Image (cartoon, rainbow, N blue to C red; front, side, top):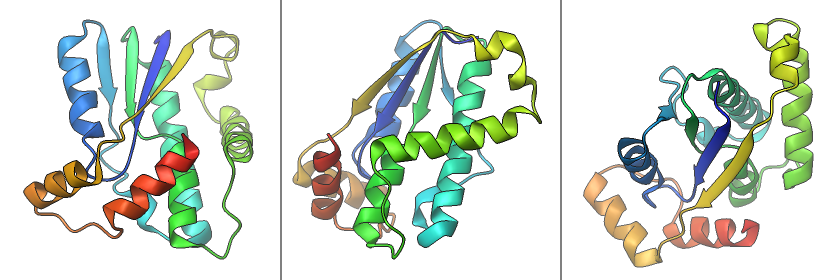
Length: 167
């Protein structure tokens, strides 16, 4: 079971996934937690987006805790759930960091009765969380986005500004 969990956060196209992958390639005992059946969770507006984001975050966190690796690496967790509702100006009040974690752990406690994570071993686990915010320049983000040939729903300036406010 992982004793350290590292989370990479940042705007779309900032290079966080690449950095997370490279970190795992060069750091013995680390693994990247992926959930292929949950894709692009931050694009849904309102409560649907929140539920989707909380579900993805819950599953990512549980997989990180259960991982056999010494270091579990997650590409986005919680902070994106604060940033994107603010960008979209959802009608629902955007959650601040403490409220989001409160909701996250409330949902975890509901699911814990349905999973092996209710086991005392998991409840008393000691682990360290580390966040790395990947905040390159607007020009660097735009260059990466052009190279990816994907569409992005928000301007790099808007995302970078929102992430900078959280940092």
